[in-house]
Length: 138
Image (cartoon, rainbow, N blue to C red; front, side):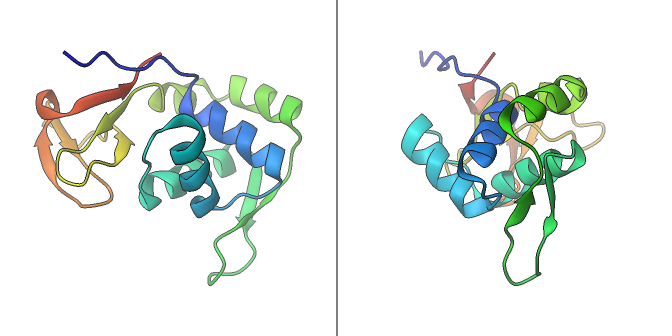
């Protein structure tokens, strides 16, 4: 049986990467998670991470629609404090599941009354959550 790798919270790790590199770009997050953490995030999951960082005030809006990089507004210490105030967003990124169709990692998305279904934002496949491999767990 595969046991999940124990890692830091994904949203906190994304905040650290963004404040370290001073680049809030989905592709940068994908590459760094894949290379450093061995977690294959899809573009949609990386973009959603940036949306949550934007909601916490860590990054701003993208400069243009063509270039999806967000301006980084905080340093690492201030970003950590901002995430401590947004515990609901941080909890959503505690556990990632691997889609059995495209093998990308994403948090569980509540589709309404189907509490045992996983919807992948990258390939848009819906599968039973029991068929998904847990990638990270806090």
